[in-house]
Length: 163
Ligand SMILES: [Fe+2]
Ligand SMILES: [Fe+2]
Figure 1 (cartoon, rainbow, N blue to C red):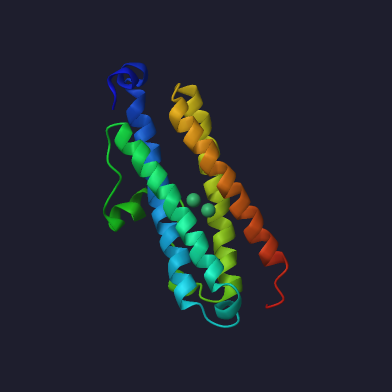
Figure 2: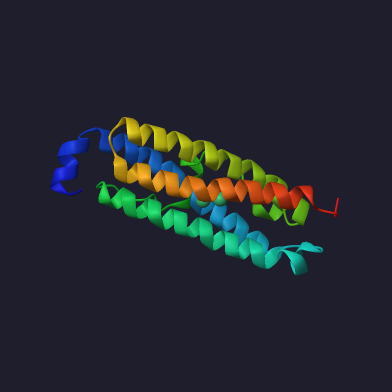
C-alpha cells in the first residue's frame, strides 16, 4: 500500500481487504460456472446460448482481476486456493455440472447475480463510510455490470420457450 493511502485508511484497509477477498472468491467461482456450462451445455442451449455464457465468463474474470489488483494495492493478496474460495464465498453451493440445460443454468445464475448486486452495493456503502474512494469507485463500476447481468439473465429467462 502506498504510504499516503496507508496513513489515510489505517486499520480500515484490512476490513476492505476481507470484503474484497470474498468478492474475488465469488467472481472466480462464477467465472468457472459460466465457462464450464458454456463448454458443456446440453440441449438447445448448446447452439443458441453457449457462446454468450463464455463471453459472460470472461466478464466475471475481469471483475476478479480488478478485485485482485485492489487487494494487492491495499497490501493483501487474493486467495489462491479454490478451497479457500468456497469458504469465503457468499453464493452457496455451485456445481455447474448440475445446471447444464439453459433454463437450469439461467435460474441458478439469476440467484448469484442478484447476490452480487447486493454485495457490491454493500461494499460501495462500506467503502464510502471508511473513506476508501478507490474501492468505492471499483465497487460502483462492478455493481453497474452486475445490475446489467441480473437484468439480462432475468429477461432471457422470462422469454425462454424451453421449459
Ligand atoms: Fe462479476
Ligand atoms: Fe455477474
